Image (cartoon, rainbow, N blue to C red; front, side, top):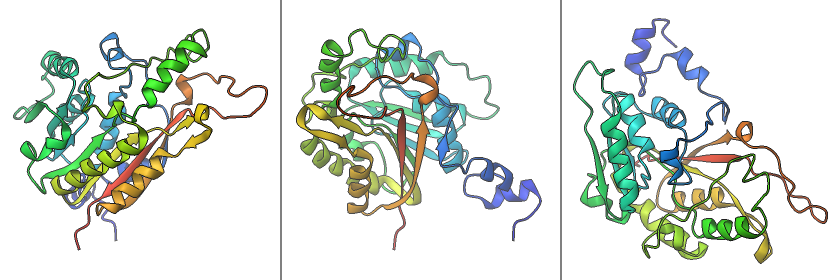
Length: 289
């Protein structure tokens, strides 16, 4: 039976939310979270809005919990972590992104904190080395978005040839950039190798996640029509990998990004393709037997 006292509700819920707050966040299609990116984050090419990460952190953790991002990029996750008074660890391979993340964290005001400043650490390394920095069974919430194999490289070629002057670039102001030339970069792998290496990462993510903790991966599906593959169901492939290493496939959220993107013609006039104006939040939970 649900107590009517909001403060009592905050004490018994794992995330500190009241019943009313819990219900208000329970829709599995999310809208109104997209926003234009600053010039700083355009250097990355695939950042997500801070308010998206703040919503995730609010739902799946409480103040003081440890939040981990193994593919940190330019540091959006840790900005949200600090805003919501959690602890945070981020790992990033690209030294330019590490520099931007550190600069962003140092520039933001800390005036909103009444207690101690949250413990936040950024490590420049390959996330496959995460056990050097993150203790086993310590992470309440992992939230990240990995490079999507060499899909970005394919998109770069497509922009140069097919969409150089199309709405996808001009009206949608969409940018695509290769993350790095580093051979360890997941964004430089063929898809089959990418999935194999991603499973290795997930195995370690399972080790660092505490019992009943969550892992949330923000991903998009793709097409590879040049190779005769109409649809690359990445979010399902990721879900299977997570289950293979021991996670429960806990939930799936659709992040509707249509408000920021105009529809464009795809396949016209010979074959009909829909615009992929959404991302998926694949949600895993660690439940020890």
